[in-house]
Image (cartoon, rainbow, N blue to C red; front, top):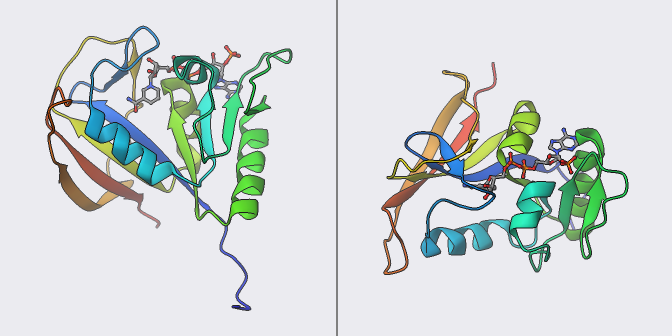
Length: 178
Ligand SMILES: NC(=O)c1ccc[n+]([C@@H]2O[C@H](COP(=O)([O-])OP(=O)(O)OC[C@H]3O[C@@H](n4cnc5c(N)ncnc54)[C@H](OP(=O)(O)O)[C@@H]3O)[C@@H](O)[C@H]2O)c1
């Protein structure tokens, strides 16, 4: 066993973004991208996932398996079976850190939606960005990133299968530290 203290988990976003910045429509995803969902599952498995109450509703109120589901809402009466409910971003990050310490996860995965990405952006150090070659109509947008604040460390085409409506690639961005 190593004597090195464990590093605090990195706050990472995972998101699929259309060319026009759209990430959602009417509480749902505006596309069918089966390969990206598989990638999402692989990249989030075993890690705490933080989401807004509306994204939780889009999961049909069932927690994603194998991950600590943490749901952010301002509603103190809200209950979510199988998830940890939190009411502030600080509380959310605290619960995510505790869950990561329990499971040994090296990342806290912020899985959306738009409001939660906006709220948590200043905490994010890494973004798993699926770039979707489409410009659908939508009502949820990913927040603009500061030019120069992020650098791309990897990019990989996602092999397009029969259940993928659009071509897409995974870009991994990391925050540039001064
Ligand atoms: N393309 C992608 O990768 C992706 C990923 C995730 C979601 N989406 C899409 O995004 C859309 C949902 O995004 P959204 O912006 O409408 O909703 P959201 O971010 O999922 O949830 C918003 C709700 O979360 C709670 N909340 C947000 N910030 C908070 C804070 N700082 N403190 C306390 N509570 C907070 C509030 O809940 P209360 O109203 O209960 O107080 C708020 O109404 C859907 O269309 C979904 O499919 C896309």
